[in-house]
Amino acid sequence: MKRLDVDDPKCVLRAVEVGEGVRFAAFVNAYECVIGDGSRIGAFVEIQRGVHIGRACKISSHSFLCTGVRIEDEVFVGHHVIFTNDRFPRATTANGEIAGDGDWTLEETVVERGASIGSGATIRCGVRIGAGALVGAGAVVTHDVPAGAVVYGNPARPARASHAGT
Image (cartoon, rainbow, N blue to C red; front, side):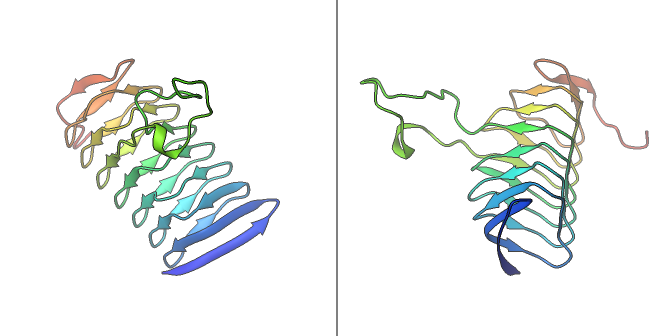
C-alpha cells in the first residue's frame, strides 16, 4: 500500500492508502480511506474517512461511500449508489445548534465479497449485504441481504434464493 495525496481540480485524494494497480477517473473526492489492489473508482465518486474498499472492486460513477462503509473484495457498485451511516440524521441539536461529530450515531455497513449493487440503489446504514448477493437497480436496502440472494424494489425484497448459474 502507498499513500496518495493529490490536490488537483480534477481529483482530490487526501491520505488515501491504495494498493497496486488502483485507477481513479476524474473528479474523485477521497480522503483517509483504503482502496485495495486493482480496484477501479469511477468519475464523481466520493469516498469518506474510514471507508475500506477491498481488492478488485469496481465503484461506478456518481456513487457516495460514507464513513462506516466496508466493501470486501470483488464487489461491484453501480452508478449513483448511495450509502447512509446515520438512521436519524439532523442538521441541528435539540437546542438549535449545528450538529457535530458527537451528535449522531455511526452505523457500519458491510458489503461482502463478490456482491453486486445495481445502479441507483440506496443502502441504509447498519446492514450487511452477503457474499455473492445481487441488489437490483433502484432498490432501497433496509435490512440484511443473505449471501447469494437477489433483492429488488422499495423496500428491497427477495426475488429468488440464488442467482448462481443464471
